[in-house]
Length: 159
Image (cartoon, rainbow, N blue to C red; front, top):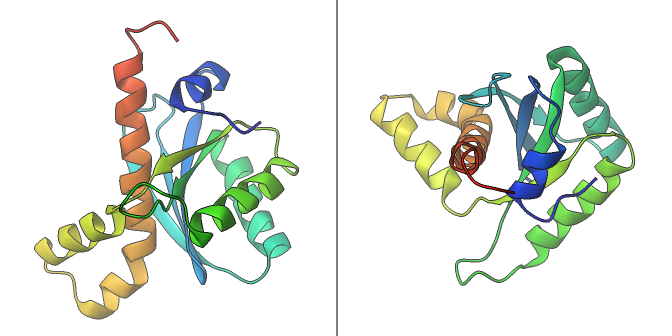
């Protein structure tokens, strides 16, 4: 089920299940997961993209192993808020994934998530080689933490 917004995702999430955040690139998929209380996002791994079936199988393995209750994909809007080819590709990936998994799927504006991840890694004095290895799943962590923070704000509101 593809959700229209984070409030719809919240309503569809099973209790005490983690969320998975994805930073979908053309060559890699950054993966982050939350705790079951939906408080903290943790960068997990970067999957090298092969073709959709292999990519989806890798994600399904993580979903099963980590008892994931929902998936959030970073949606790469243009800086003016419009959607370009990368956003359309992300939406197509979500539609294809939705056919394979019975979990709610939502999108989150990922503008500047990679910039924030890069800045954090530079501040941590991470080597260039190590930054290249981890940037995608650190960016996925930023995307997922944004969703978790929004879900936290929705706790007191009526959805």
